[in-house]
Image (tube, rainbow, N blue to C red):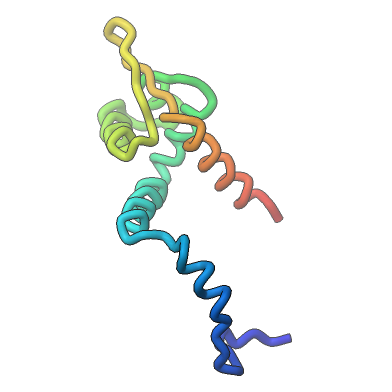
Length: 118
């Protein structure tokens, strides 16, 4: 069966359309989700998220794991913090980073599972 991605008959299923419209995503939600996926669209940030999804790490640890300078990692962590994907805590002179909450863990793990699924 060939799919043309167009309706061969011009019929609108009013009930379905109205049902979807009732709870349809709002404009500000679209913008926020778009920004979130932009942040997630960077390979370095994906590596950082993966590293800190395993355990809480400091900038030195992350830089060593992903083989980047501490300043480059710090820059990416700032973006991740501003997007509320990462949180930090200070212990003495060391700042440790972890994922913001379980939603971020689930989002990351679901994405990884999706691309690994055949």
